[in-house]
Amino acid sequence: MEFGKVTQEEIEAVDFGLPPDKPETTSLLTSQKKKKDLQVFVGCAKWGRKDWVGKIYPKGTKEADFLSHYAKFFNTIELNATFYKLPSKTQTASWKSKVGPGFEFCPKFSDKITHLRRLKDAKEMTDRFLDGISGFGETLGPSFLMAHPAMGPKTTDTIAQFLESLPKDFKVFVELRHADWFKDQEAFTKIFDIFEQAKAGSVITDASGRRDCVHMRLTLPQAFIRFVGNGLHPTDYTRVDAWVDRIKRWADQGLERAYFFMHQHEEIHSPELSKYVIQRLNKVCSLEIPEPQFLN
Image 1 (spheres, rainbow, N blue to C red):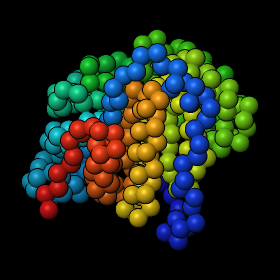
Image 2 (cartoon, rainbow, N blue to C red):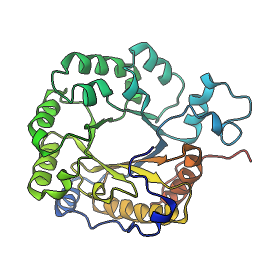
Image 3 (tube, helix red, strand yellow):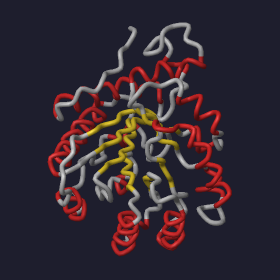
Image 4 (tube, rainbow, N blue to C red):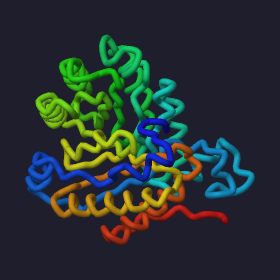
């Protein structure tokens, strides 16, 4: 993942401290009338990593069996494959057959919808996407919609109309990347209020070179965190510590569910840091999430 990438020399100058929560986040969480036990899902962006063979996949594992092994160690996947190719129901049903109970697929909206159409005149494509991911059945988690990076505050109405067009029971989280969303407080407030009204979640992406995207505005009592590490740099671990502490605070206030997706610029390193994330969550939040087991 290249988003927010900085040089090794620049890492030392980055302020990785998590900003304070937006007041709306605190209000949203503390207003939950019935507190639920926190559910946490930790995963990566893809399972088809040949360089994980001998690390967490047994030597000799065939690519067709990667997902089955991945699902032994992680309980979710930020499914980027659906961004590049519209999935068929047959394909998603096949993927579903390879995971166990409690696993959730979080498919990314197709680039044909978000980048080619930029959410306009995209009904046919969206219908195909929704039909395709329906094959996941009960393993379908929230979908992840990354608005095209060029979509800034002038596209507020377009985003709102697209969210309104989705089925009412459809679970979606939205990521914004255009810098003006975070510079213009009025635009920021308006779009996140729209998310909250539409019952759409907000994605928080923690990347070294884009600290503005760590906006700390939840629009549901759920969090969807995309963490971009730096090859197991020491700051990767201190950043994880800060996130686990924040998730614990949110849980105490009323957070019901958290998705934590691990990214690295070189994804070979994702399992190691994911294991650390799970260990810290289990300790701090009193959870029992299974840890990835390394073979060497």
